Amino acid sequence: MVGLSAGEKQFMHGGIAQDLRSDGRQRLQFRPISIQTGVIPQANGSARVTLGATVVIASIKAELGKPAPLRPDKGKVVIFIDCSPTAGTMFEGRGGEELSSELSVGLQRCLLGGKSGAEAGAGIDLSSLVLAEGKICWDLYIDGLVISSDGNLLDALAAAIKVCRFIFLVRFEISSPWQVALSNTGIPKVSVIVEASAEDQLEVNVSDEEFLQFDTSGVPVIVTLTKVGRHYIADATSEEESQMSSAVSVSVNRHGRVCGLTKRGGAGLDPSVMLDMISVAKHASENLIAVLDSEIAAAEAAEDDGS
View 1 (cartoon, one colour):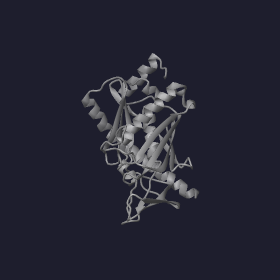
View 2: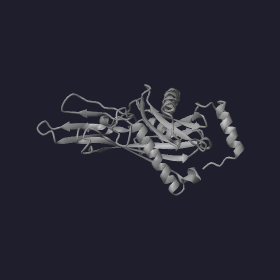
View 3: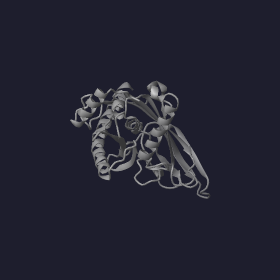
View 4: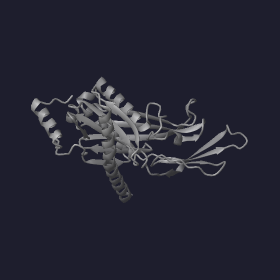
């Protein structure tokens, strides 16, 4: 926990009330953000995001698997977050395990719409991961690592996942070509050949030479609004989070659609306040998406110059 004196707390609360935070930002202003893609060569997609003094890495690995028996029309996404003990003393021992679990569940709710990922409006459409219903699907393993922590970890991790750019294309040889795409770099082209005489028999060919790249604009960002006193702020630092009464994280896609929501903190919120926070988060997401788009373009340009 961050220890603040009575004077520091009063200074922070007074500044937020006047829309001038301790680091000079306004209440809804994010810290400078920078990204680096392709930081883990073994992954199908990876990215490092720096948000102020918060630094996280996310990677995505895609593997062919079989849909769950009760959900034959959906693929699977597994999210796991690890907090490095070097990121802060609060991450040592069970503190790191509890925060890792909290972040994993928060991302699951915001990006997949819940624990099962079956809810309408989920940020990642699990049905798009199916290659042959009940037989073959993509299993996506999303891993995140917190390297340095200075608040707003959920938003930073979601941004890293978004810019990982993981995507694929599938072709059924029995009929006309069929394409599905979720997002990226490094997922191989797959051909699924269905035997006309026996639909239960499939032949899967994974290309070693052809890799596909697609846009990830449909993956949402997460905007967390932290309530400090009577006001709420975006992109809270660890000091500001130590003074919060509650926080609401809202995932919003490029079209302004809310894909998921999670709340933490013991204090309750009036429904009208909650609705206002969702509206503010939707507005703030537009600026965050624009910044990420700019950073992605810059990173891709740097990669092209390097090659």
